Length: 114
Length: 116
Image (cartoon, rainbow over all chains, first blue to last red; front, side, top):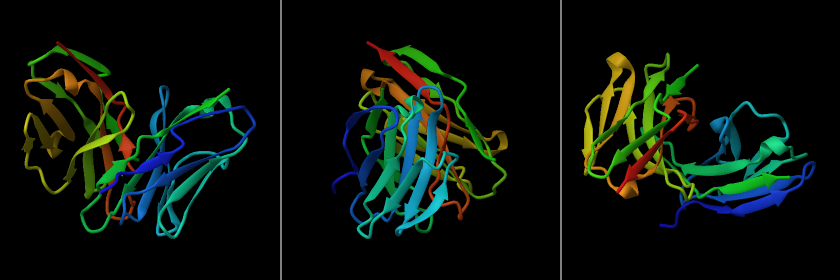
């Protein structure tokens, strides 16, 4: 079974630009979550989508947004990029039914804002 | 609010030594799930184990073992006979209850270096 894929793997953007990151979950998984990882703040939850609906949202400004498509693929968008948005963005897919909360992470997209 | 604390920022051991990574959590929920993930230099978080709050049975998987103690709110991870390939950052994490979806709260991580 193919794992979680994220594209692109690396990205360099300039302050003020916007960026869209993509995540394809494991086949059959309906939940997709996004996390931001930085050296200073560690791993922080951005948002979670389940069946095209945002189910949870972390404490990030409105510049961070996401969506999920009917095939469970998800995108996250960051508008008006700031230097502090430089981070590794990780996507996780899961199928949290019953007692299953196992989430599987993709390789991440490393975003550098200059 | 929930919190996960990994007090050990960095640990360095010599190959074949045993090493324990500590994890302490805080939550008011009676139902919760605890996890350990491994992050090698490639960046991908690798799932190691999930434990629910009603199952305090310790688990062993090869050289890995986990000790879950609700009385001390700890979920420690031991690697026996460590190997160089175990070098990575290890994260402990928690998911609240049945209604919070899949939102993981992570600890700060412990950088483990296993020297040959």
